[in-house]
Length: 137
Image 1 (cartoon, rainbow, N blue to C red):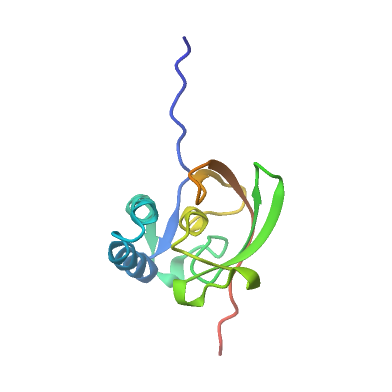
Image 2: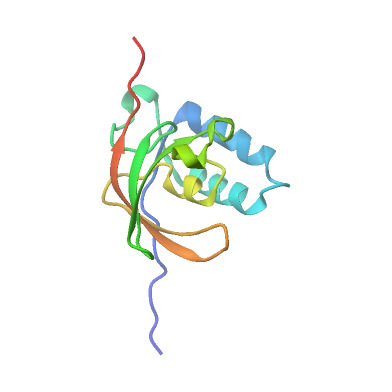
């Protein structure tokens, strides 16, 4: 019998104001989306919190465009992480209140996470690139 170490999740980082808004949102959907709510709260609770000005530019935050590989299928996907009201899967905008959205928040290129999909199957998501939205002047 071999004893294997439990897999450690990669370090995550969040902007203070986003972490607060996401925690409120997760609590608000707890009855309707208990699994996603619990996953998001867990990610927030283990995140290193930064002010917007000190957040590293390569970290996935709300409105980031993300290139990631679903290692199970080998598919490279490009999505933008958004709040639920802005989600449009056909336009590549995925809600933070989806399993993939909750799994990607706070990661950086080169990091991977094993995360359940909507059907409960574990998938490895590997971040390739992160692009931050251009701020209006």
